[in-house]
Image 1: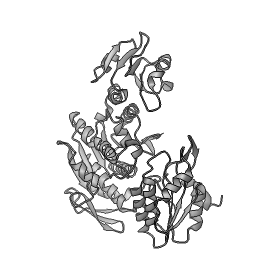
Image 2: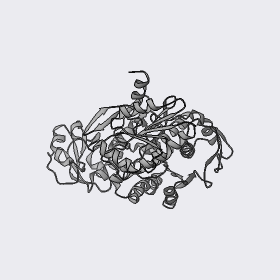
Image 3: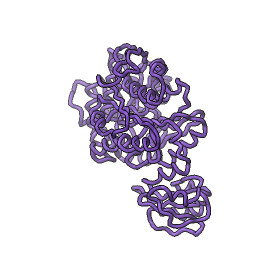
Image 4: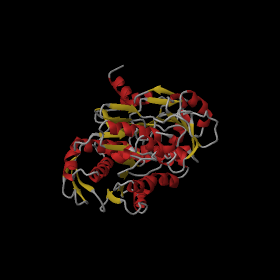
Length: 483
C-alpha cells in the first residue's frame, strides 16, 4: 500500500512521500523488516521517535510520527497527533479491515473474561464454526498458538493476527478486552458484532486512578466500539450482566441502535436449578430449555449465560447452544482441579477470590484451605480486602508471595494481614510460594479442599525485574509425587 493511500485515514498528514510501498506495521524498531511502516509510539518509559533512524536502517519504507523527524527522501513520513490512537485504524486499512469480514465478540469485565471466552469458543465450535481466540492465556486458532504477553495486544498486532485468522478460514473471533486495552486505543480498527460485560469489581486502580475511571474505560466497548461497528454495516449487540451494579449502570450508557441482551436477573436470561441441572428462563429463544452444566460455581453459570447470549446473537440456534453446555470445561487455571481436592485459580481480586472460595465451600463439608498473595507494584488497596475475604470464606489462610516484582514480599503479606479481624480462622504467612503450597498440602486431611489462588495459568513468578519459572500445577504434582 502506498503512503498516499494510508494518508486517507482521518487525522493522518502525509509530510513526505517516499518511493516504497508498505506491507506490514511495526512499532518495535528491532523487529522492523524492509517494507514496514514503523510507528513511533510514545510510552511512559520510552519514545519511539528515538529509534526512527534504526528503523530506517532496517528497511522501513514509511514512518508514522507525532513529532518532526528527519528521514531520507525515499522514506515516507506520515504525521498524526497521537500515534497510538491512530495506529489501529491505519493497521486495519493496511491489513484490509479483517474484522469487517469476521464475527467479532469482545468480552470485558474484571473477572470471568478468560472463562467466558473459552465458553464462547466451545459453543461456537460445537455449532461448526472455525473460532479464533485472543486471551490472557494465549492467542489461538486452528493449529496456531501464540503466547500472550498482555490480555489485549497492541492494535497493530491485533489487526495483523485478525488478517492471518481470516486467511486461515476462521469465521468467528472471541477477544478478551482489558480496561488497559480500551484506555490505550488498542481496539481501534476493530468492528465488533457483540460486546459482553461480565462484572466490575476493584482492580487496576494503580493504572486508572479511580473506580469511576476504571468503569468508564470498560464502558468504551459499548459506548464507542459497538456504535462504530454499526457504521461499518454490522448489527451490534450488547450482552450485559444486569445482576452487577456496574452492569445496571451500563444499560443506560448503551447508545440507540445497539441491541441489549441481559442476563443474570429476572429481567434477562437466567438458569434455575441445582446439582448441575438447570432450566433456562427469561429469554424467548431459550425459555424452558434444559441444560446440564458440570462446572462448579454460580459465577460460572453466569459466565455461561453471557456466553450463550453472545453466541445466539451471532446466529447460533438456542437449542444448539443449550445442548452444548455439557461440553463446557474450565480453561487452564480457572477453578481447575489439578488433582482431586486441589484447585488452581487465577483469582487475584477480592471478588474473584470470594467467588472461588464460595464455589468450593459448596462442594465440601470439611476444611477449606486457601493459599494466595497479591502482586507487587499493583493496586495496594485491594490487599487487606483480600485478606478479609480469605478469612471469612476459609478455615486456613496461608498468605504467600504472588508476583512481588520490586516490592518486598513480606511487606505485601503484612498489608494483606491488615484485613484480618477474626482470630478463630487459622493463618500462616509463608513468603516462599513453593513452601506455602507444600504446607497447604501437608495440612490437607481427607475431604479437605485446597485452593491455590492468584496465578492460575501462569508459569512464572516476577521477582524484581526478572521472570523466574514457577507453576502452581507443577509444584502440586511434584509434592504429591514425593519429589
